[in-house]
Length: 155
Image (tube, rainbow, N blue to C red; front, side):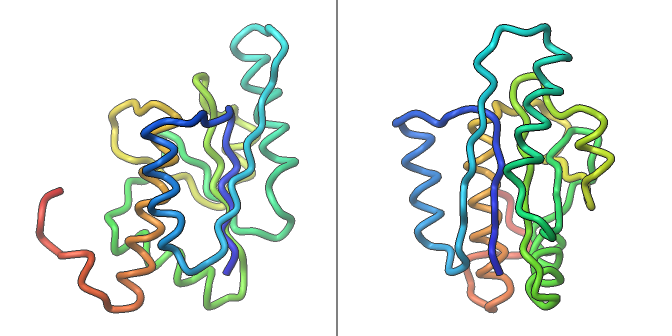
């Protein structure tokens, strides 16, 4: 299974990137991170629309699309693992769309196969990438029956 993370903005060197790469190296599936950026100064809604179009273009054809948005469903780690398992077993790649500071616009949300929320809090979009990659690693370990994930334990 191929995993693609399509995200707005360029992650610079620093602790977030180091942590992202730490988990990414541990994932056995290919994980491609495609960063897009709108450099023009635009009003927020127009900027989010343009960023959404860039995300759409970065998303591989035929991939199961998961848009990260506060209006989505929050999955526990086991449910998240089952989502990846269904894509893996169907021979289908999975793409995650991570918006920028203004989030995703309605067309991207409507075209997604699933809307996923990491709770009701607002998270910095660069930190969301780290959380997402860790959850992909955790899902891999859950599906393999490895003890990385412990049910009932708080983080």
